[in-house]
Length: 124
Image 1 (tube, rainbow, N blue to C red):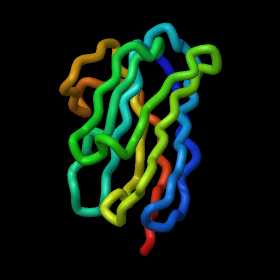
Image 2 (cartoon, rainbow, N blue to C red):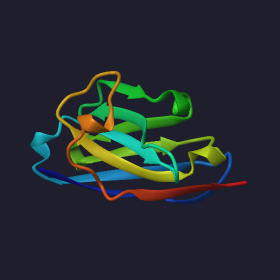
Image 3 (tube, rainbow, N blue to C red):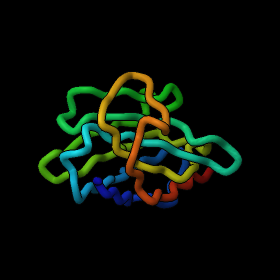
């Protein structure tokens, strides 16, 4: 299976920007798309966005539309999550995960391999 490693998390002020990376290795041919999820303390894991490796299909969760952008660098086996105009409620651990298909509405159950997560903290 494919292995995923997130990076780029950290502390950022509200209104600022941050870019997360998701590096894939191993059996990358088994991955069709990468999804991004986040989980804050006391809350359920929330869908952020999904993109296939070729970058032709992209969907976002309602809470981040217009602020977050997913992108693919297929040659580098790396996916990115660009987060702009960050809000306090964006504070969470962010995960990337691999799926064998893509569609507009996806849940955590649709994904197999998961990264370890990276903490994003937005301060006022």
